[in-house]
Image (cartoon, rainbow, N blue to C red; front, side, top):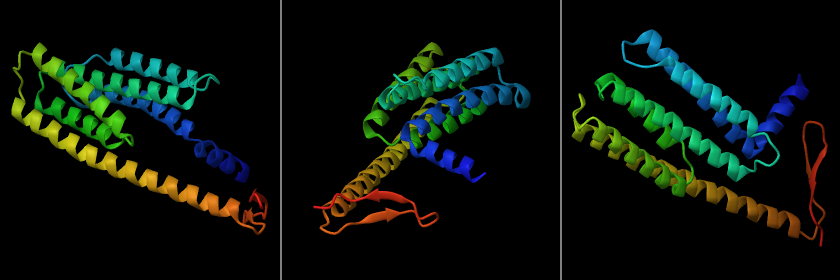
Length: 212
């Protein structure tokens, strides 16, 4: 049991595996999104579309374990899948003419996505794409929506500003932690004394400094 827990902890210490987990999360989102709409609402939607996308996302998640898929490639794949999921939600909103129920679901998804990013560059790129996609949906509806256009714009602007603040803060503290880690690593390795980093549970040696 302890070995299994240690293997799981080791697995999630690797950053790329967190990104892979996000991909599989998107597949569950697609599946349960379609199921929720079909079972608990009267809104128009095609559940086969969500199930098909969920299946494709699972395949993409499996392929992300290929050795040639490096961290940046998997991150790009994750962002593209997020974009596909949001496009799916936008299509759902389009089918329902931006009514209040569909718009509420869109707002939740946009907020969750906007608040989860840690890169400012990625935040701006993807938010611009999401705004453009939403604009195209409004054009396709001839700006005739149940939810007022001004209310949609205000909500989008509020979520974008709040999302940027959270992304900026997350990015700032991420850099602070990295710099502090580099400083501690420099002190550890440049010490004239021999230093050992030991696991207090089993007293195994984790790291030894480079004594001058």
